[in-house]
Structures are given as C-alpha cells and as structure tokens.
Length: 148
Image (cartoon, rainbow, N blue to C red; front, side, top):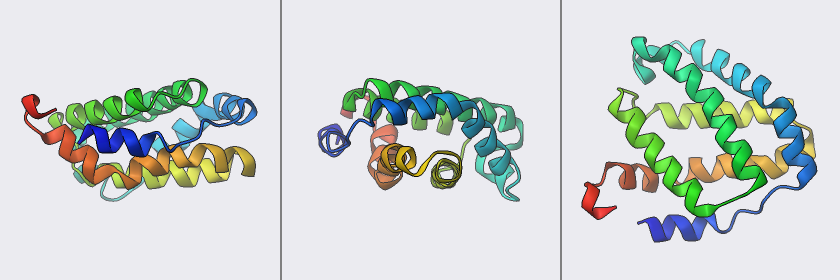
C-alpha cells in the first residue's frame, strides 16, 4: 500500500522558491480562512464532533505548517507517512471520514483565492494529491499495525 502511495507522491513537483515563499507569507491567512469556512459549515459538528472544533482549528494551522515544510523540502515518504498518521490520529479522536474531502476542498478553494495564479498552480497539486489518494490513505491508516 505504501509503495503505491509513494510512487504516486514521487510524481509531485516541488514548487518554485517564489511560490513556496508566497505560501509562507500567506499561510496564517490560508489556515484562518479555511478554519472559518469549515466552522461555518452546517454539518461541521457531524464531521469533527462538537468537542473537537478547537482541534479542527489547530489542525488547519498545523496542516499549513506541515505543507510549508513539504513545499520547501519535499519528501514523498514524509508526505505519505504524515497523512496516514494524521488520518489515524484524528479518526481516533472522532473525526468522520467525510471531514477530509471537505477539508481539502476548502483548502484548495482558499489557496486559489489567496495565492497568485502561479503559486496556486504550483501549491495546489500537493493538496490535490492528498484528495485524490484519500481512499488509499484511509486504507493504510485503518490497516492493522503489522500490515503498515
């Protein structure tokens, strides 16, 4: 499972230094905007559980911090392992599987709105990769430990 995900992740291209720098300059705004939009969803309590709203907000900020590191020093292994770990941990905290597609769609829209066209075009594929590979990431996150 991880081999297939790693092979797919290796197809991503690290953004230019200018696009990565633009993301860095705007990542707090991206995280805050995504968090607000997610919080405004009528189904957010179903997606994360009412007591997990502050955790969801932290997740938005942590997600942009993690993506910052990937945009500067891309590691397919780190991308795959961190995505699998995050899904496992947040599922254990009560997040519904439907949270991740909603979260990624929200981030992609916010990135398109906030970043320049060039930076958006170079950064978006990382979020789209996660979105496209969610079924395999879920499978890996939910596999018994010895199968990982």
